[in-house]
Length: 217
Length: 108
Image 1 (cartoon, one colour):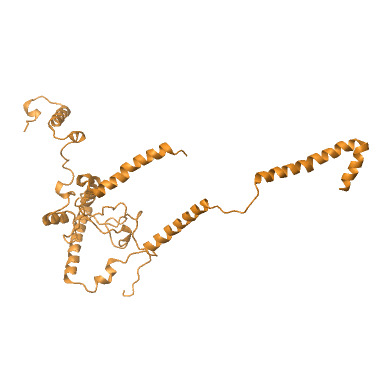
Image 2 (tube, rainbow over the protein chains, first blue to last red):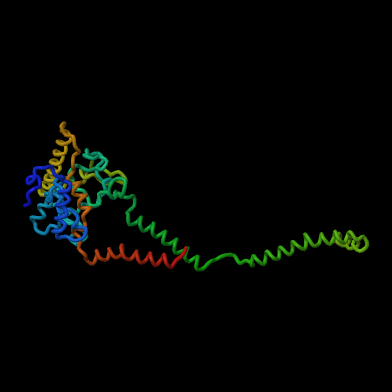
């Protein structure tokens, strides 16, 4: 074990420099590579000790008992998540019930969360708070509600798709042709006829007889 | 209380569950007593800390610390299996290539 600097020398020494040098030496001797080499290999002593933090999946009955005690549960109640590599470790599998379902009249330590101090928290606790997902009973069975909603949406989507494929509407002439006909008619009756009448009426001889014929029409 | 009907959209409280009163074996009773003992012990610890007049700091909840630690370190217990590899591929790899293809070929 290395003797510390302040024993060897009597002068004051810059501890930051000492720390940096020690870190660089640990890096050069360290086993890890990449980022893990830069991180410190030890945790601060201020938090929980290693045996009260979650650990790997318990394999022996002794490990199960120790894990149950760690999580403040009875050994018979303790059931870890199945060990299929999904990252749960030895965390207990609690019933999938939201906090809204808990007794509202009991004196909880944390009333808004409906939870007591030290009680094992569900893995999805932040999902099951009262503001979010609620597993309380619904007026109609959940499966019925799902079937009705998705059935309706699916049916409407299917019908809209069919309507796109096979459109149905009243038979009509081309509106473009209609517009041209109407335009031509309008030109004849409202522009050409009045124009000829006014021009011909200025020639008193020939225009007057035509005008008389026009007035009869 | 025999004709109790639970409020709509609420679960029946555990204390009014008929199975709590009828057909209870001694093992079930002992189990409930053990659970109650654990709960009472935790309550006692919390109340002692809460009502301690000399306490100046926050009451630390080890269960909360464990939960945070467990949620933050899943990779320590991760193992590549069929299911986890499939999930990783579906959420991490397929969207990458699919979105690249969609953005490159389809213009709005």
